Image (cartoon, rainbow, N blue to C red; front, side, top):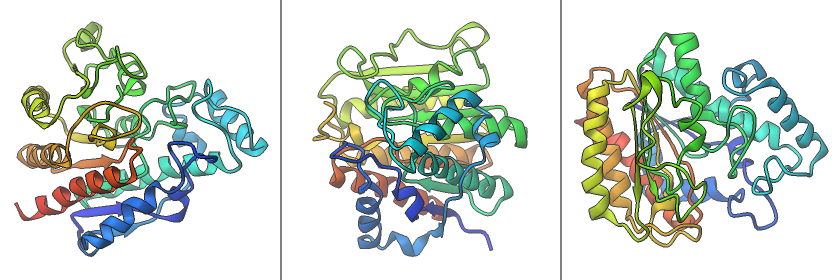
Length: 318
């Protein structure tokens, strides 16, 4: 029996979190799940568990040298995966590979027709590059999904949509010249925030010029500004006619996040999710995967991610 929405939550995914008071601690999944249960949304989804991704799967995007380096640091149990933001700990390799494995398991379910939508609360690690980690992101699950769509399923025309407060540089630059990947990325202006990229002039290169839409938002921008820019996003996506949509719905763009300066409410996340589900349905496939991304105020991420999950569920009735 087909279930419209599959939710990935389990102990292995919860272990993707850094110790010693790190902003991305191991309590984020639990904060989300408690709100899911409170809202009774758990009764309207099918729960699924992660699996470890095989090295060959991760190497569809990442270099083998980088995958091996993370494995060695995980066994060592200390050190830094990047320039200091992403510390190694015992088991980080296994936790990060579970994030990728959950995304690939969700992809398989969507492509087999077992469901139309999945939500990966611990996912959307959009700063990791092919050869390195960055910004709390060890392996880039969304990028692996994109490469897997091409390699295993023959799906080329894909859309990646990102409303996390930080620019998704780990998706933009590796796919900058890829004309089949449409990107929409609304983020706080890089002049004020990590990673300092994602200017409006960055719209793709070569044959892909015009397929990427970066929309820097001024610090303090709220729902009104988001809705205005979101119309441009939908126009861009509609022109591209994607066969599959990935939605990174980072909650660090919600007002009050300790690491950023935007002022959305969860209504922005719900609005984006609702319109993306509608677009996917209008395109005739309904295929969309949601990824939690960033968010460092636990109440904000719990509310924002469940707003997205709720729209995914409601799309079944529309």
